[in-house]
Amino acid sequence: MSNKILEVQNIKVNVTKLNDNDYICISNFGKYKERNSKSDDIIRNWLRNRITLEFLGT
Image (cartoon, rainbow, N blue to C red; front, top):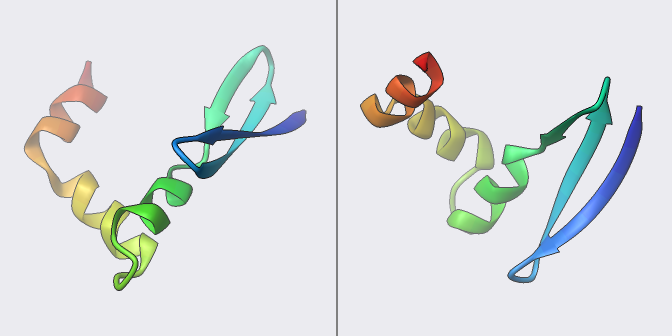
């Protein structure tokens, strides 16, 4: 398992490589989205979105 940090539009994003697959940390994006909200609330709302659920189902 190896870890990297990428910077995308001034946001530091953790990337972990495991078994030749890359995984990004979505909580890093949640922190950037709205500074007054908790990142877990942002992610929770994102996962309730119908379009997100359809995407994850494919």
